[in-house]
Image (cartoon, rainbow, N blue to C red; front, side, top):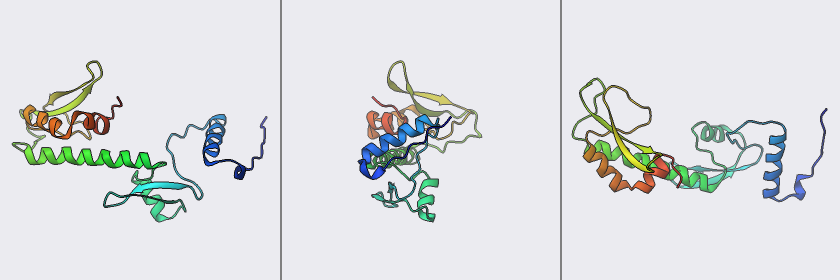
Length: 168
């Protein structure tokens, strides 16, 4: 048995509308975790030169293009986080490319390939080494020394937050 309720959304603030929609989704058993704007809803995106802009969703090619590449955010803060995350990733990749003593060769099983990870027990960034296995999305270094320099230059806090996804 379904209960039908009619609500005049114009009488609600934007915050109240959002709360109501979340409650309705929860009551309907919606499991959608990925947000996608609808109707004339405002969203934020990062321009090609790193400026955060906003516009209303009209479901055109541009809107859907931003959504498809993960450049469609509900809040300005989410867009700012995504922009800084991208900056840190680029800094880390460039540091490795500019400072590695040799090219990381995945066909060479004897070559050490160093990377960083977050240790949940110690709460620290630590290093490890691989020879044959490659983890998707990880930046590799030709030595521990260069990896430690990258951590120092970019900063532990920024790496934890934006590269490793650790909230402290």
